[in-house]
Amino acid sequence: MSAPDDARLRLAVQKKGRLADDSFDLLARCGLKASQSRTRLYARIAELPIDLLLVRDDDIPGLVASGSSDLGIIGGNVFEEEALTGGAGEAEIILPLGFSRCRLCIAVRKSQDYAGPQDLAGKTVATSYPALTERWMRENGVDGRTVTMNGAVEIAPRLGVADAICDIVSTGGTLDANGLKVAETIFRSEALLIGGGGTLPPAKQATLDALLARMRGVMRSRDAKYVMMNAPRSAVDAIRDVLPGADSPTVLDLAGAGDMVALHVLSTDAVVWEHLEELKALGASAILVLDVDKMLS
Ligand code: ATP
Ligand code: ZN
Image 1 (cartoon, rainbow, N blue to C red):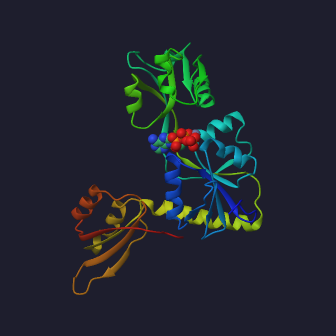
Image 2: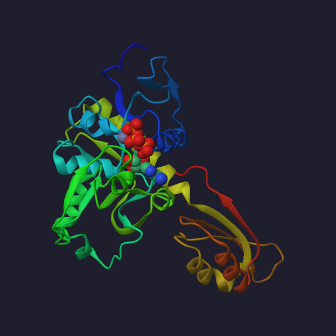
Image 3: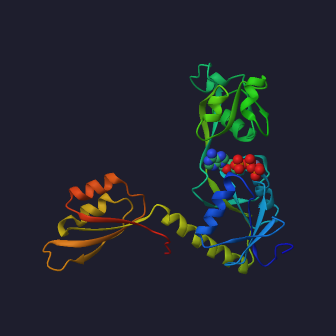
């Protein structure tokens, strides 16, 4: 394949990196397999008329804003930074995807006492997210400065380039290794499906609707469990209240079991051991918890 076809919906995804793995995983769970082209610039999806553009994540908001791609999957941190600086044009969020969650934090030297935003007054903060950092400073009345770095931000304090940094933190291991500690969390990020903000031609809109139905189905089924058990008929309401996000249970008579019934409940949120212990206390037995593979409603 040489180039994407105009009739097909274009979706820009990160070629490789932390967002890429989760993006391809979501597509696979939507039943969409990407055939990797040899050039590794495009990949065609066989099941729906969608072409993937495989790019660096930083380029995604711009590709969507310019209409070169109809859609993109991008970290909220990058999208929000671009939106604040005008780089995202009219692009807008279509659906938050709930994966690649991370936080953007201001970190200071471990030796510095940190009591609150006022301790950053007059300080220089090194970051790849100057607009988000400056917005936080404004909102918190901090009169500080940012210096933009596009990599190795965490070494800036040791280089004497900055007093503090603002960067993505997951475990805090990188900060620790560089003698830094978290002072503030300024932004919580997750992956977003973004679009150009305008109207799509009907055929592409239909493809987008199909894609969204599948994505929503995957997200809804991610934590969902189908719970089956035997229980006293009188406990049915109490059992529904125990299970998170439960709909009306299906109640089936158990032959020759008196007051006992079989209950089937779809729980849309995670079911944990504590829930099962509560069910047992309500008289439930033979409790089975099944994963939900797909859900369409
Ligand atoms: P590229 O070469 O495409 O520019 P990159 O180095 O900018 O890649 P990655 O490190 O792959 O980017 O991170 C991409 C995005 O993944 C981040 O912008 C953020 O939204 C998300 N992300 C980063 N770190 C984590 C993490 N530890 N856990 C989950 N998501 C993360
Ligand atoms: Zn990047």
